[in-house]
Length: 554
Image (cartoon, rainbow, N blue to C red):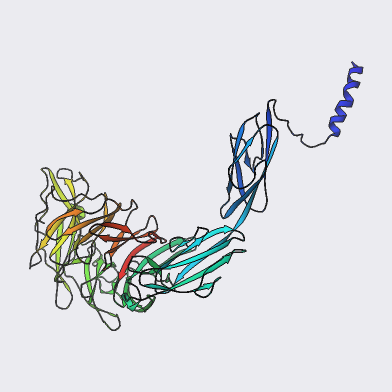
């Protein structure tokens, strides 16, 4: 026995002398070991199929003899995979045949950010080679360090490229070698005239609200739209201005914070400067209740209106303000003597500017109502709210719940109506679109029935607006859909849903570009609309942080 132990001791000491650390485990019989290394310059991971390698966490594994192991390199954000070495080479797919122990190295390169900014009164696009930048949709991208990037400018309709600034200068080609992060500005000039005397076909203003641990911030994102509907940010945008609902025309934009209504002068380049304000809440009774919402104008642009929420601490009314054409300042004209909770949104004026319409189903009270515009610009309720509202013909056992109104440039207007069960007053189908014709006293009639009204694909409706020429109706809610408006004849469907995002507000310019904001997705959509179809404008949708309200100014 002692002789046997003596024979084993040299073996024990020999093994101990081979290293006090952890010994490498040899691969099982019939298999070979694959070892992966990741270079330290950049960040990334390498994984294998079959499973076993997840490097840098687990960089070695055994695989069956003759197995084909596929390795995949995934760079970290803003890093780039540059090459394989060892058993694989190049940048393509890496498949290792396990006929012996193998080693593979993966190299990653840290990326550098290139940012493009658009400036000037015109619109355009800037693209990069290699691909990555397609501004104004995608204006910042990472490229491998020391990459040579060529930027190409393309002016929009009625626009010309002026010059580069930043990492490039002048008006010739722009080439940037990214040894570090860099930025370039592209300036475009416009040649047409739009709102505010700018070079744009229209000016687009979007109020937004952002909140973080440091508090909330309010801005107006501002854009110039060219004839294609493509948007270019206005110099100085976003403007740090605390407003929600907005409306504008010509040289002035108006916005409210729920207490005050502010006047903003629109400069030639579309930028904004506060030119005045009025405390609209002070005219309430008592004057510490409620405040202005849903700003809207008459067709002449000489009078500003707002829905005065809780004007008497329990009901809503409409306020009127005269507009000084030379300064944009507001003069309080009065408030409607009629107040009611059924007044829930802005009104829509007929083409003759004599009557404005709205509708509501507040607490199942079905109302379609009109206000007469008086010679001084104030409003007077023209509808007897105690009388029955004319509603479309419904199937037996059903009725309709109206919501919102949108008038054309003649004497017709659209109302969304949701079919309801008369016994339970619960919805029994999607909303439909009814057509009404106004008479000379502000009354209304309809020939709409459940058979001739189109259904709306949005299950809820947040906004509904008529195009300036009266030919199209946009409906936003759980999606966005466009219909053809045919005067006193039934409305017809033009499109299916253009997006599935929730649309909070829609607005038109004079050339049938439709603008729509989605607060939940943080997007501004732009579409060009004709009777033959709808196309999304170049660059759409645009990213907007928490959009609240939208105003189109011409």
